[in-house]
Image 1 (cartoon, one colour):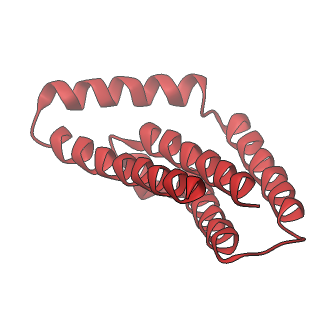
Image 2 (cartoon, helix red, strand yellow):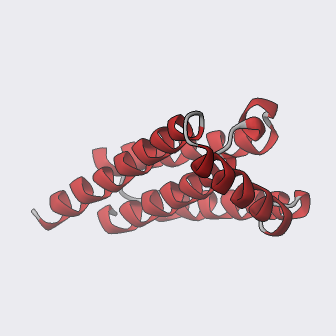
Length: 132
């Protein structure tokens, strides 16, 4: 019962993250203050956190965490663990694709998309460790 409540809570957090990104991108088209803030933060994060070298480090850390997760779940693969591994892989592929896709880099919420994807990967890792 406890794991079910934790899983539902984590799915809710993931859903709220996606909805927040959609709302921010929508509002950036209509509200100048929101667009200005998103553009400023995007440039700030791209200059400090998401440089070309840092994106390579993020990709390597993602690969190491994925291998660690596979080693953790190697012994017992239940339905929740399989689903979490698949979601982890999907979020990882989307994150690496977002690093290199020109369309994503043009979005006002690009930095926030990267932050949310990394947060979702951390949530899936926590879910895998809890459900193992």
